[in-house]
Length: 270
Ligand code: KIV
Image 1: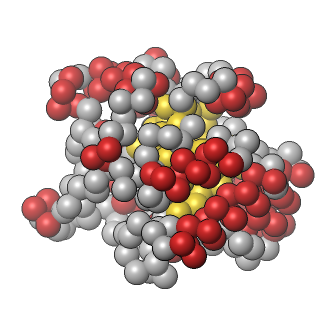
Image 2: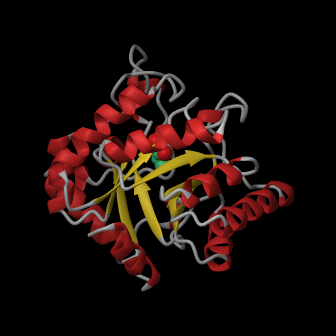
C-alpha cells in the first residue's frame, strides 16, 4: 500500500492500524501481519537506547532506523519522526532534514507541535514532502509540559488543540497524531477536519491508532537502571502478547482490535 491508497482507506472509514517499528525483522513481521503504517518513532531514544526521554535522538539515529524499517517492509507506508532540533529553527533546515528521512525510505515525516509549526508543515507540503502533525502531549516538550500529562483537559487548552488541528489540516498534512487527550476532544477534532487522526491515548473515535511496539508486547518497563517496579504502565497501553503467546499473533490481534474498534476500550482512554 502506498500513501495515496492509505489515505483512501482512511477516507473510506476503515480504521488505520499503526505501530512503531525500528528494525527490518519486526518491519517484515508487521507487514505480514497487516499493519497499515509503521512509525519510526523517536521513542527509540527510550525503548532502544534506554534514555529517560526522546530529547537526545539525532537525525543519524532516525535515518539509520528508517533505512532498516524500509528494508524490512517495502510495501508498507513508513512515517519517520523528525527529532528535536531538526525542524524548529528554520524551515529550510527542516526541509533538508525531512528530505534526508524521505531518501532513507520514509513516505512521510512527523513533527511535534502546532502554532508556529503550521508554517513549517505548509513549507514542507508545498515542496512535496508529506507531513504528519503530532498534537496533544508532545514528548519532545516533556520538560515544558511538566511531565507525562494529559493535554486538553481545560476548555482553553482543548480549544488550542482544536485550532492547531484545523490549521494543520488546512496546511495540507496527511495525518494528525493525537497523543494523550480526552476521548471526547479527539472525537470532536476527528469529526471537524478531513485529515485522518491517529490516536494514542485519545479514544476509539480517532481515524486510526498507534502504539509503541514494546508496549504492545508488554516488554517496556521504564528507563535503564531503574527497577521495573517503579514503572507505571500508561493507561492507554494494552499487552497483546499475554493473550496470544506469539509475537506474530499479538501484532495481528492488535490490527484486528483496531479495525473492529475493540481497542482502545474505555479503560484505555481518558
Ligand atoms: O515516537 C513515537 O513513538 C511517537 C508515538 C508515541 C506516537 O511519536
